[in-house]
Structure formats: structure tokens, C-alpha cells
Length: 163
Image 1 (cartoon, rainbow, N blue to C red):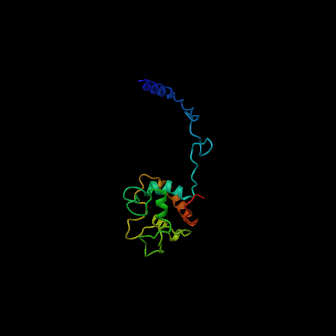
Image 2: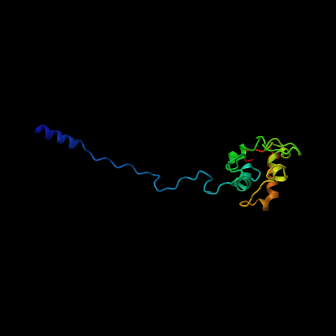
Image 3: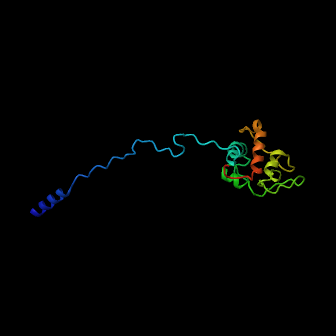
């Protein structure tokens, strides 16, 4: 019995209250601003860039149901899919009666890019001049500006990155 008491006393003596964890210096502090030193707005997208064309033209005008919504190419749902299914990508439909446009977008050559051609000309045996349905877009109000920006983007080499 004395051994049992001794073991219990040793066990109790070995028990010690655990120290509380140290204070966290980051508790209740907002995360640091890693974008622009206090400016919470995203930088403006240059209007000569593909990002601007995607945001202002291709996504709202072309990536709608039944058109270029991923069911067939070009796919305008994301900026990456739009770029990679347009630039240097073979055109599936061409106009044999006009200048042969064999690529959807041929860098530096708007006149030989089927994208620009389909936006500005009726092509026989197709659905017509694009866009077919621009209800959720400001295409009709800004058509000339958008055509000019698309033409200039192709003429500048159809770059993926912002200038």
C-alpha cells in the first residue's frame, strides 16, 4: 500500500499546469494590402489590350448561350480560352469568294483574319454577320469603337499581354 501511495504522490507531483499560449500579434488586424499601397481598386485595363477586348467585347457580346459559350470554338468564356482559340487558330468556315482568311486571327493582318471579316461582312453559307445576338452587350452603341480596337489589336500582332 505504501508503494501505491508513493506512486500516486509522484504522479501528482509530476502534473504541472500547462502555460497559456503566447498572444498572437496578428489577431484582429486587417491583412496587409499587397495590391497597391492602400488603393483597393484594380488597375484600369488598357483599351489596346486583349484583356480589355475580352472584358468589353468578347465576354458580354459573344460568350452567350448558343454562340461562343464553350459548346464550340472559339470559346469566349475565359480570357485564356478566348485567346487560345482565336490567335493562330485555323478558321473552320471561310469565304471562298473573298480574300482567303485561313486563321481566326492572323497577327499583324486584320484583313486576313476571319474574326474581323465575320464582324464586318456577310459570309455566304453561315449564320451571317457577327455578332448574331448582342442583347446583353453594348455592341450596337459602340460597334465602331470595338471594330477599331479589334482591328488595331490584330494589326499590333494580337498580343496576349497588356502593352
